[in-house]
Amino acid sequence: MSEFDVFDPEVRSKLDEINEKFKSFIVQQKNEIIKSREEYFTVISNLKIEHQSLTNKLKDLISKENELNSQIKRENNETQEVESRINQLKIRLIQLQQERETLSNQVKDLNDKVQIRRNELTILQNEQRKQIDQNIPEVLMFERLLGLKFSSLKTGCLKFIFINIDDKDPQREYELNLDVNEYDYKVLSTNPNLNQDLLNQSINNLNNDRDLVKFLKQIREFFQKN
Image 1 (cartoon, rainbow, N blue to C red):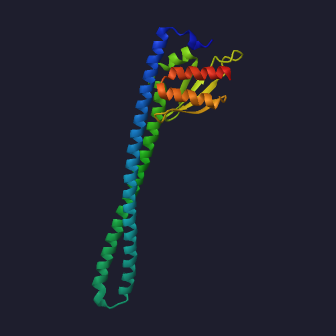
Image 2 (cartoon, rainbow, N blue to C red):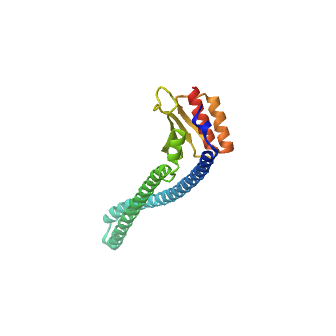
Image 3 (cartoon, rainbow, N blue to C red):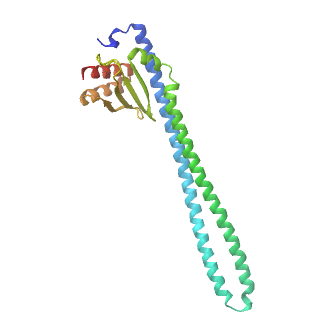
């Protein structure tokens, strides 16, 4: 007889409440991740466009600078009548060099901004991984009543570890990895491997009724019978 078969109505009610909080938490985390990703990619896209524009301007300035250098060399070989023109071109050349330096600094600043945004996204993802354990105190209830614990593998993916299944080795761990990035959850893997047809049926039921407790109970029973 599994541990789930002896739950009284009060415990079952508490587990249902935990399940609802868990689903709400997953939806909230997914929405925050989607929003963060959209903002990140929008910023990156704009920065890339601006970066490309500045790069093109920089190339154009370099081309003009080379052209002016060539023109200066030609006019240096001419008469004194063009000396004034040469001086003007030199002044313009200096101006172009200054503009090039300014644009180069702007390109560097844009690259720094891109790196900052990437670092911010990494920090956000790390914080979201931690929140799964930190923001759901009911995880202790899952561990105590269901003989399992869970943690975040990566953003949107959860690892469930079952124990107290093997009578000969109660501490032996049975693992389930669940992808919750999309509305329909997916089983990424189990260890040991379970029958794929049974897994497909169970995950379909979970996606229909969103009853996580029932799903985990089924997985535990599959491990017991495996």
